[in-house]
Length: 372
Ligand SMILES: [Zn+2]
Image (cartoon, rainbow, N blue to C red; front, side, top):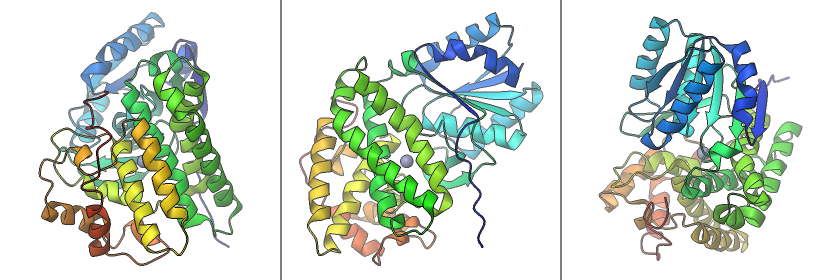
């Protein structure tokens, strides 16, 4: 009998308007001298105000700005600063890469971890997984952590102020859960995996129904459903499905594309979304039914409404040549890649051919220009 080890959920999740302030008493129980980590200039003010609130409760925190994506250099630095200052907890406040870095630092130090997503761009605030990148943003590997965070605070008032582009990116990442897991895991005999796959389907349906309204109106109920779906429910699916509920092609294609240079760096979900369209194109070529074709066209329309990239041009590669693209395909098709979970054989040449067909499509937008 095989043993499955799951980290399904943070010990406590506090969500809603004012969740941060309401969580201060919980934070005191978890740490007295936390390291607050963050990165982008746009969230600096928010992080400063979190620090002030902590101080009013008598919690003396240390602030640290990461220099890069979640990379070994930043992790090492944060580890040393945390040790030097006797920090007894990590508060990671930011997007996916900051949350991943915070979880990993806390895991290495064996101290409590509090995640405060400042956007709904990924489910990194929830999961027991960190993606590691090089300092210039190339995907290296993912690391499984001992557990999910001790506390996740999803404050709607704060997350609502994030650029709509981050929510759109979160939607692309969240709908990918269904298209990837249904392909790799729908025949699983494991009840948890079956339930995770069905939850991914419900989440996709909710995002299709509410996504556009959520993108346009952060005060709507649709926004709540979608933002929490992207940042929280997507995490439950990963926790419940565990290691057996694998990705298919969209995430490996993301990992491959991050090996290239960009004139303007796309968000995680923006690249995953494009990877998903390529995945459906591959399915279409390897299937006798019209379903992948219909799904691709439905997703392309949905992504266009949200100004998400639907072509290679729209992810702003600095050198969009065939050689570069082949480099991404080789990375995506390495021996250990989840891309080999696809129900048909695939190699870098097949992938390259599929990617090329996304080269000259009309762009819905160039990222970061029509919206940010
Ligand atoms: Zn993802």
